[in-house]
Length: 144
View 1 (spheres, rainbow, N blue to C red):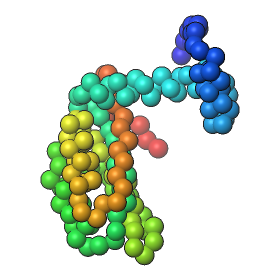
View 2 (view 1 turned 90 degrees about the vertical axis):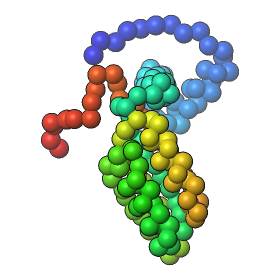
View 3 (view 1 turned 45 degrees about the vertical axis):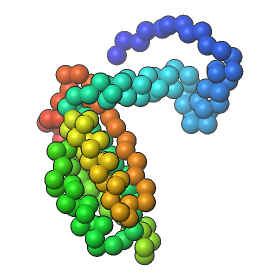
View 4 (view 1 turned 90 degrees about the horizontal axis):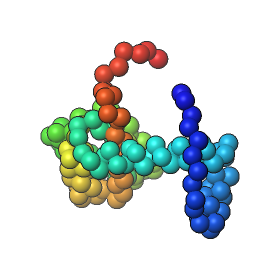
């Protein structure tokens, strides 16, 4: 990887706030924090531009009731977004958390996320999105 240097002029107060976050998060320095922020900004811009090379995780919390669980399964099976995996966690006797990993177009992913959020009994729903770089695809042949 070739590194390029560049200069940036920003207000002193903004830099002070940024430096505080750099320290709190344990970054080695500003450069790594800026690279991290740039990667996030690029991914968000790609996501907003649309396309099919998208990934996301949908985190939800809900009351542990058979009807809600059946509705979740039905909605996922009927979705245009591809459900890669679902992790189900029992938080308490009355509440569950799920992390649903998704792949597909941003429209299909958002549609599924909105449908899930609208299910009666879903108490929390948060979508984390990620767009792969242009030219990257979902196929891979590496092993773990």
